[in-house]
Amino acid sequence: MSSSRRTVLRTLSGACIFWVAHRTASARVDKIKPDAASALIVVDVQNCFIAGGTLAVKHGEDVVPVINRIAPAFQNVVITQDWHTPGHASFASAYPGKKPFETIKLAYGNQVLWPDHCVQGTQDAALAKDLNIPQTELILRKGFHKDVDSYSAFREADRKTSTGLEGYLKQRAVKSLFVTGLATDFCVAWTALDAREAGFETWVIEDACRGIDLHGSVAAAWNEMERSGVKRIQSTDLELGR
Ligand code: VGL
Ligand code: ZN
Image 1: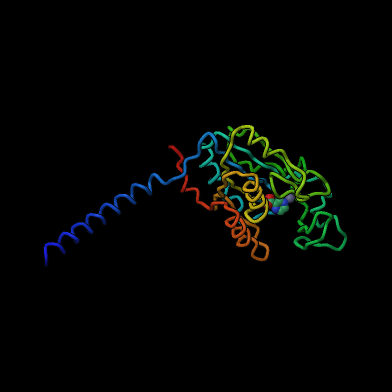
Image 2 (image 1 turned 180 degrees about the horizontal axis):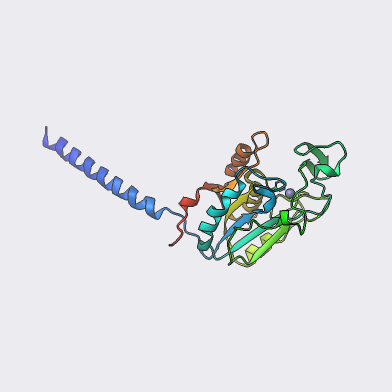
């Protein structure tokens, strides 16, 4: 072998070892570390959406231990609650002859009809009892106007009425949101999309969410979220600092 070829090989293998070492090191430092400008958003982890609830999401209760495990890494936490009036416009029971999971047209657009769920003040609307995030400062309720649904924690389904969450987060200098909870394809997705529109850096933690999945709506929601710049991560991508 010529000496110049040997030099090339030695240099290449050196580069290779360097690359492997560098990747191992960067895989460690590449974890995402929540900071003072980050908030954890816990969407609708309520009895209605877990086993035994009126609109149970398959394996919905499995998000609770994941959220409990990551929550201590956040100094800012917002929990939301779906909080409907009896006879709410999103309930199939409000329309004679209509069944849950059918769609109707309301003044603000298409509305999926749901079983009666998360009625204000009921046990069904209470937060899942094992959810344990004592430092939570804001519990925000939504969907409380009888004629308007609100999947999003930011803006009701009329796409006009604000919940005030954008102002709350901005006044507290929050810039990055980590969205978790139920359901991936409805309240989580709408919240994450509105978060992007409001200019927040937005991460959705996939294993801390579960979906309802009507006609492929989970895949559609991920497509739309990723198109709008939402980042899809797993809870293990977070640096929990412990
Ligand atoms: C939700 C359907 C109806 C949700 C709320 O939390 O995703 N889905 N109401
Ligand atoms: Zn609802």
